[in-house]
Amino acid sequence: MGSRSSNRSDLERRALEIIINSREKGILQSELWRDLNASSREGSRISIKLEKKGLIKRRRELANGRWTYRLFTDRMPPRIDSIFDSPCVRCDDFYRCGYGGAVSPNKCVKLMRWILKN
Amino acid sequence: MSYIVDDDTLTKLADIIGGEDAVKIINVLKNSDEVTDEEIVEKTGVKLNDVRKILYKFYDHSIVSLRRTRDRKTGWFIFHWKLQTNQIEGYIKNLKLRVLEKLEIRLQYEKTHDFYHCGNSECERLTFEEAMENFFRCPKCGRPLQHFDNGEFIKKLQAKIEELRRELYG
Image (cartoon, rainbow over all chains, first blue to last red; front, side, top):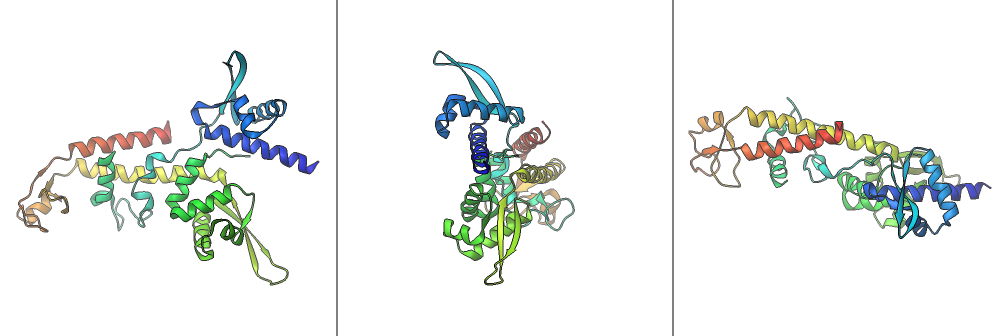
């Protein structure tokens, strides 16, 4: 029983991971079960459960002449792209640099290059 | 259950914190419930010392949690590490807030100063006061200093600030 329930929660976790990675576009329910090697019955049960937990949303959609659901995340995962190439986040002085600190962003050449590159 | 972080974000975050090795380590953590340092070494090929250094960096930012047990045979401690995905959103938000703060400081500085430059990309810009002190000659290369238009920089700086504010406050 314990193992069955842990398999279920593992499947739930994997399903959520795939849905999250599909971001705004979402994923068709049928595609998801194919990726997970799950039956459509098991799949529907999990997606309903995830929706009830408020983690995903299901939207009805007509695909290849059949009604199915598109699944997508209810809460958008955080994105780091806007600061990923910022020199600040990799700078040894990141936590010291600021107003009136020993290190200031005012004269930082790397910061200027980063902004001008955008 | 809070698993609201996608692979791309997780990889980039690890890269920022500890580079290529950290990415390998986070991939192991992501696919395990709990894992020991030795198991990470086996799976990644990264040296034990480096694995521990990176794990402590993650730990400092609460990205991983740590549980300690004692090996009955040797008496040594065994460290069990677990990824805390629910802490990642907060950590990223904090990084963005700190970057935003720096950009706002810089914007204020750019708006309230006049700059001079010699045209040599290896030399720094000087403020009006600094240029005066140097008789409008570059202290590094000796070339005459010309007024530097920072309009484009200010525009792009404002755009980045707006982007971060939107992400942080909607």
